[in-house]
Image (cartoon, rainbow, N blue to C red; front, side, top):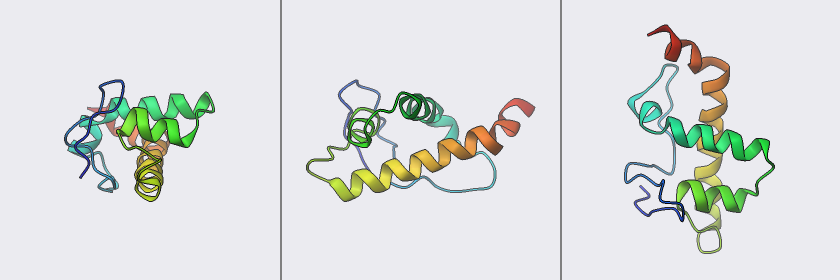
Length: 93
């Protein structure tokens, strides 16, 4: 588990390298929804993977390139799931 703080201070001590996957919303999703939104926004702005890993996940890609890519991919995949499927649960409740 990653316990560092990103340079913008948004890092959470509960942020994991791999998002716990489920076909429904999880408490992890609710806790980290703002990170998913920031990742999607950064993707739309063509931000670098290194920048997203560092600023949003608090992982220095120069020191931990494999971990940074894996964690970013996991969070990007879940963010994409949220906007294609998970949002239905979010707005249903």
